[in-house]
Image (cartoon, rainbow, N blue to C red):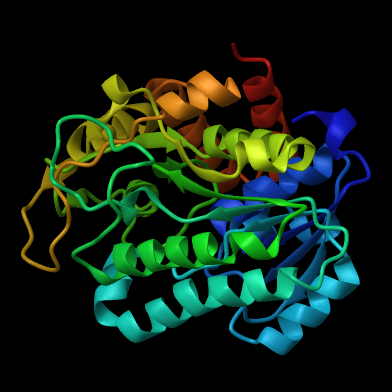
Length: 348
């Protein structure tokens, strides 16, 4: 991150107690930003938030984004120049079982954040994070672009596509601030303990000496280390603050398309990094429908923002395994995380 830009900046991050929001908040604080976090308590135990003692770096407010009055008060008091919205119901399979909750959090929660931002006189930029699953997935062999049609066949993607429409409809209310949405690929890295996600499921199995059972081994996804989209969001916010009309709109941040990999490939590669005796077993599961093939095109971010993924999938998996092994060995995770950020910043 550009410390000369972020130093002293007032920033509000929703979802700071989550995985990606935690990494973003930690990096912002290290760059000198004054970060206010707004979210429910950490969704898992353990959590990235607790592992790196993030409460010592941010002004943490534990509240629900569906509470517009509380959110508006927090927004006014923080007086942010930059807002990052990441708070969400983020799990695809959970959305099948709780669709009403998912739409309430992901759609009306986003509307509430946008509405609360209208009371911020100092606002210069807002980055609203959705997902790569907002696109009407046609199982194409090429990556989806920002201008491709939105749509979904399941509640999670549908709720995020609807959130994108909310962002678009509110843009005219912010003539002096840049408002952008970010669609990131499948994000991996240390500190994610969510249920029914590949890497956390793998770590739980490996740590217990149990085989990892794969539900959809042949599904292809754009896996990337969390620091790549965090870098993209920060860079986008810097540009939005300097020239709102130029950088507003939707942006994809994903790995190089040739790096898209099957679930089985990622699981087996992670298993080798963990322990040669680790077992991965594919057992095709019947259950809620999930896309088989999904990739993103980040051509716009590369050509216009000058952003590119810095870590290959192999490096991303290696750093992820290192983080979790360090955690299980009771190392100082603030130091481990800081070292990974420094290594990422030094990458070409």
